[in-house]
Image (cartoon, rainbow, N blue to C red; front, side, top):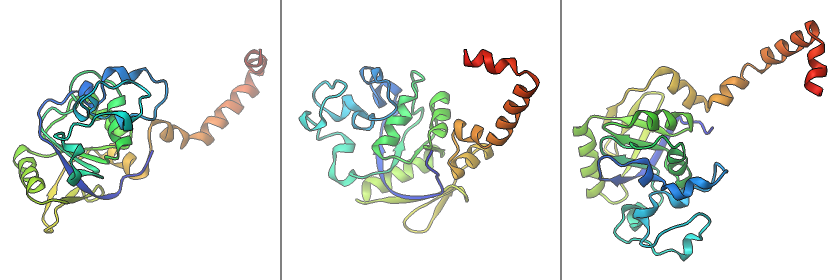
Length: 216
């Protein structure tokens, strides 16, 4: 998992409440057995005027010119600004995969659905909770100033604005530790690989018949 330390990026405003996971990555794209390739279908029903199907070449699609991510000023955005209850709906882990693979590194919103919130941390995406007044202030600034960027400092737990002002945010200590070090659940387990190997060696030494059972 990619580490998250300090990230500076262009902000894109998703000015809708209750954005659910089917809007983030529609159900027809969940058929893939791979964990990659979802970014091109992020917000698919909103990004395109035609119905998309898995494996379809994005160049053959008809983009919706009114959708925020299709507007030239937001191309290359890596910080998503959202409204309350972002990520509601089904628990599909494909939603943070799609956001990450599109290029987003952080989301800022007043609230999130619990499962989506947890899945973000497990996949290297930082979901920041900020009160509605501050989120609205950031929406106003993003709309007013083309090229509006924010710097997110996870270690100091700060969102730094272009004028040098900053908003503090909270993040649970263990989640912060994992993001700063790039540890997903597998990475955390592999940190104990020496102990795991020692346990396996001792187990086979005391119960050698298990080796034959496993081989069979």
